[in-house]
Structure formats: C-alpha cells, structure tokens
Length: 86
Image (cartoon, rainbow, N blue to C red; front, side, top):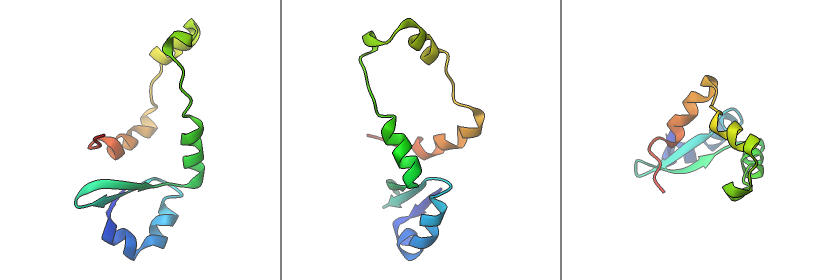
C-alpha cells in the first residue's frame, strides 16, 4: 500500500495497524520515501542479510538458488519496488 506523507501523518495509528499485515510505503513529493513494516517482518529481513562470496557456496546451494522462484502469492510485493531507484 502507498500513502502520502500527509495522509500518513494524519492517520499514523491506522497505518501502524495496517503495517502489521503488509508494508506501507510512504511517499514524499510523489516518490517513495519510507516504508513502515511490522517489527516481525523487519527482524526477518535483517536476519536474512548474510552475504558470502559466491565462490564459497557449494554446488547444491548454487543449484537451489538457480532453481528457486517466488510463489505467486507474493507477486503483489513487486509493486513495492517497481519504481524504486537506488
């Protein structure tokens, strides 16, 4: 879900509750600025931030990565990042 920063400020409690179910993207000047998410989702995302050089991965892990896909149930999450630019 996307909301303007003004809408977010005026209804912060509503969006805090909504963020327990799905991330809320807050826009500023029409562009994504901040994302509000549940503490549980944040913890899960941060725990997943372990990186290793690809050379250190075994063949089974490399095959698993190559053959992996995102379930259709999560396709709507692509909308959160489709306009994102670093």
